Length: 154
Image (cartoon, rainbow, N blue to C red; front, side, top):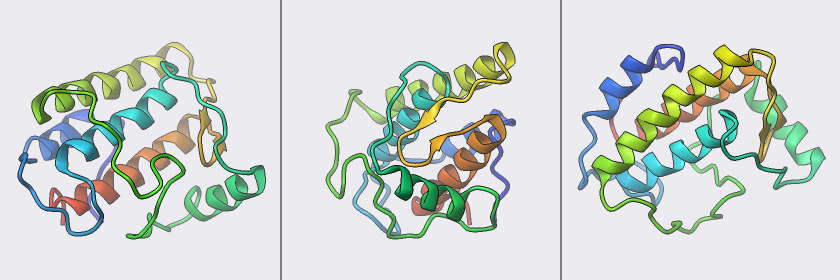
């Protein structure tokens, strides 16, 4: 699997630079801009800028977390998270370029947030409380999932 690491934002942003507006996904219903805005939203939850509560039962969160965190498991191709549930959310930005720039800012905010507060443990809407290492693992797997979706990584 491709080396995506949130602790090296330049490699993520370099891969993202190849995403074009008309790119067709290998799976799923997201457009390129929906995917970028979706990734940004998860960084907002993890970088302290948009706290969110748990959107699934505590039991379901424990099940998701034990499947994804601390394992070699990746996101299943047909995974449908608790936000959106199979429908495309309204776009927040006018175009893909603006969405990419917002993603870049949130990725940097993520690094800055944990530099200032390395012990922070923001809530994940489907996995519950995560520490920095767990958020790193989540983001790496989440980005790989969506970058593969749009042929940005093999």
